[in-house]
Image 1 (cartoon, rainbow, N blue to C red):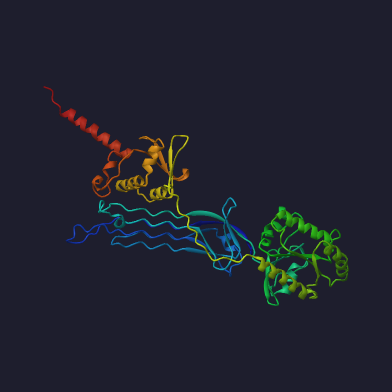
Image 2: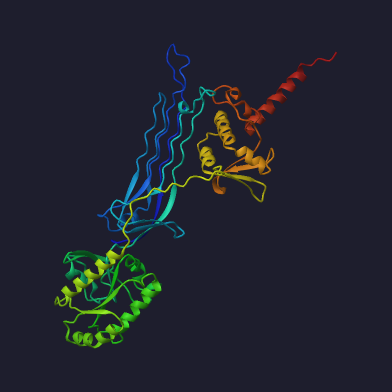
Length: 478
């Protein structure tokens, strides 16, 4: 059964905003109570937050679909709808959030670090909030916005100071077990370690974490063994430790060739050339292992490596190794740039930024893109003529109609507001800003009297024909 997962694809859905309410206050002896529709509640966000108690992405491997709650609709009596509850998803420290194309969206390091993976939709305004001097009793309300739908990839990169790399059964897990209080699974067969193991080591005044990377064999950077799955866990480590087996029973292996193979895999993976490296010759408690360590040590030192001869079983050379690692970790920490206080960057809009764009496409369609026009369209109830008129007024005040005229649009041309996959398309007719004088009863707008559904037009034509037939039947010739 899978117990450790360090890469998952997560499908998150934020909550939808609640619809606004169109209501008029009704009370005895108060015929003109006025609008009292409340606003809809905001939809819940989906938030990824680092939790130190979480060490794997296993929960999201089994349940990759997560959704926040929707906002409640507004009600009469100026009662606003309840906001949707945010969905907080705990992730391990060191989780990287990517989109489907592999672009990094967030790198979550440090307890409490969070990222909003999907934002909840805004609640729609009720007719009480839409009332104005010219529109005293709106017969409509704004719809709630739909929440974001996102597909993200979560990758876990272990946060450790030291990484142990080497062939399977080189003794990496044994080293962690004796240097720290970690208790990894240890056995005498390859690929015993199937997940990265972490341990905390104290050497003098320095406390650091150490991790082993399982499954490195020739071709690991191309997917052989387990190396490709776990090489990412080396990226955050400050120091690399080559653990070389001096007592291997394989005749075609020796410490120098093992070192060359692992270095080649690290080089092909990339991004690790600047990490300090040391070499640990393990298993010197075995007589042949001690002799081999003494033979290869001069060659390793000639290559510029610091070499330590140790035995995890006999606890030989461990103190010197732990203090040497502490020294390298302390130097790496001191070389890191100090974290600056959080700065707020204000980027004002350009003077000529209208907040939207109008482009003419090859098929003659004019497309309007912009945050405000697209949001207003999503919040409009197109079954209500007054709501559609309100949208037309807002677009006109924003300057969309002027820009359409400048782009060469004429009456009857097709105009689309929004992206190609989710746009509202209509035949454009130039108009003037409407006020209260354009309104009839609640929910009506005189500008749309001629714009009737097809079924209604058929019924009207049939009624006209019936009326003509009745007039012909009643006609009496002289």
